[in-house]
Length: 293
Length: 130
Image 1 (cartoon, rainbow over the protein chains, first blue to last red):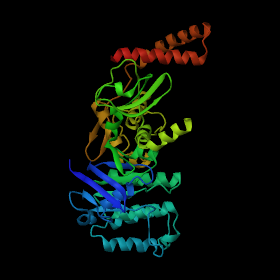
Image 2 (image 1 turned 120 degrees about the horizontal axis):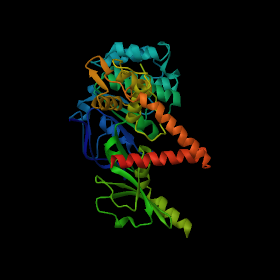
Image 3 (image 1 turned 30 degrees about the vertical axis):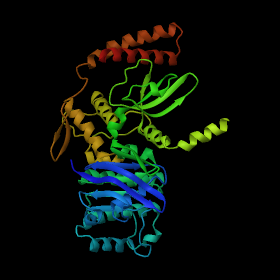
Image 4 (image 1 turned 180 degrees about the horizontal axis):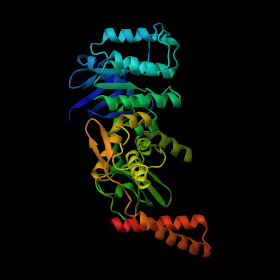
C-alpha cells in the first residue's frame, strides 16, 4: 500500500529548540490517523511541515509520494481554530474556494453548507466556533482532497458541535477515497474515529501503528512485586508502578505472555496513549522523589 | 432496519459491539433473512465512527455466514439465529428458575447469585475454548 505521508529523519528547529526531532514514519493510505500528544509535543509542527508552511531543518517529508508544495491541489488542510476571513460572507468563502481550486465540487459544498443552518450572507466572523469549523471542513472537502489534514479540529467545540463535526467527517470518509490525519489531545474522541495512531511527546515520536495492532500487542500485567529488568527480553516495558507487594506493568510484546504469576488484562486505547505520554514525563518522577526526602 | 448504538465505556471494541447487536437482533427476530443492514455510510455518520470499523463488523458477519454483501447495494441478512434452539429455551428457563430458588433457599443474595453465575459461566466458557 502506498504511503500518504512519509518522513525520514524529519526535524524542525527554532533557535536552540527542536519542535520536532528525528521523526521517521510512514502512514499508509486509506486510514483515519490520530496524531496525539500533549500541547507543545510537535503536532502542529508536523502538520505544517506536511503542507509546506514550514521547511524542515533536517530530513525529508513527502506527501502523496512527492514534496508538499507540489501536492497542494490534492491536500485539504484545516489549521487550528479553523481560521476564516472574518469580513467575507459564507457565500463568498464558497466562491473563493471555487475560483482557487480546479477540482472544486460545488454540489458537495452547497449540500454541506445547507445542513449548517447558516445564512449564506452572514459574515464568517460572526459564526460560532462550531459553524466556523464546519465551514472550514466544507471548504477543505469541496476541493476533493486525497489527503485531509486537520489540526485540533474539535478542540474548541462544545460536545454537540464536536459530535456533528466528527459525524460529517466520518460520512466524508465513507463516501470518498480519503485519508485523514487529525491531531488532538483528546484521546476519547479519537477512539471512535481513528484506526491508526501516532503518539508524539516532547518533539519525539513514541509509537505509530494500526489501533487494532497496538491494542493486541500491549498488555497490562499485575502480580507480586518484581523488577521489570527481570522480564523476558521481548517484553518492552512502557510503564511500571509498584507498591510494596505488587507490580503493575504495561508491556508491549508480539508474543503471548506465559508467566503464570501475572494477571493479564487488556488495555484501552486511552490508557495506552496516556502511558506513552507519561513515559516522557521524567522530571515528574524526580519531583516525586524530592518530595519524599 | 435496526439502529446501532455504542457504549463507549464498555471496554468492548466498537466492531464487536456492532456484531453483538446484529446477533441480538437476529435472536429476537428484529432482523430476518433478506433484511438490509444499515448502510456503512449511515452508520459511520450516525455514530461518528470510522467506516472501516463498520466494514470490519460486516465482514465478520459475512464470515460467520450471517450476512452477504451485494456490491453497490448493501449488506443483507442471509441467515437467522436461534430459531432451532428456541424450543429448548423454555425447559432451560425452568431449570434455571429451580436453581435460582435453590440458591435463595441457601441464603444467597441477588448479587452473590449473579457473581456465582457469571464466574461459573466464564470458567466454563474458558474451558470450552481452551
